[in-house]
Length: 337
Figure 1: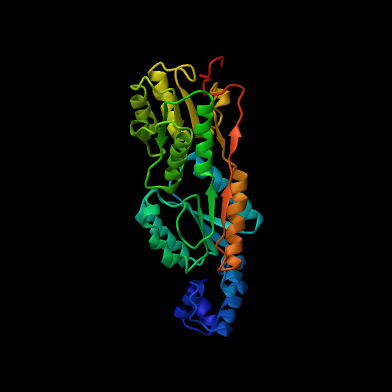
Figure 2: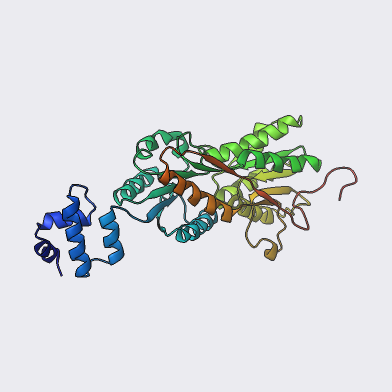
């Protein structure tokens, strides 16, 4: 059956049928219902989709992530999908590849598909360009995840500042004073907050903040590797706070090549847990990301935003310290192991 057959049976033009199929609002309800009945009767369209057309709704949500190869995003999207399925929602996933223009293209495309709402893990440079979203948040319910954008939208925030502060405090409690940091990209609020937590902890404990101990990374494996090579040139450094797990993996490769043993030669703390690390013989002090909670909270915020357009709550998710039998932070205090 063709669209012309549907038009003939409905007593309308092909253009009118096309408008109904594309959810164009410029069709009278009576006409729309008549066309939908013909569609359903003749199995021209799957019944579920036809019902959505007649109700002018779509049970899909969009999720835009910046890097599908990053384990953090793949894990949190998995949990979001599980929670969405429980609520009868399907997920349309888009990968922007850290491309700002592609991200905006996806936002427009998802809006055109009349999805119920959107979850955005924005690109690294969106923090500095967030004003572009002001137009879109008026058109569709949007939840932002861990980006700290100064917008009137619901947002899930991880305790980046507080967790970085606590991690650096562990070094200090174990007698470390020469502590470096490998940051994420400083165009991103997540990385900025982790750096600020590092700085504040040093200052609160009367430890001099040295610019040469701040190494800028990009949350990727290579930047952890390259910064590791630079860090090992400074023999005074005893500890390194690494702002995510991918950079930690790169750093560990550099340590191995430079015959640096952890924690005997240098101590480290990874902001994010490295999956399967203990099975690989790696005892790395780190935080466990609560992916189940992230998934539940994100879907909950989106559903509340869909129901109430004025809802703009910010929810902070706290991180749990991974406790290993051995720490990757050496105790330098007199009498320590």
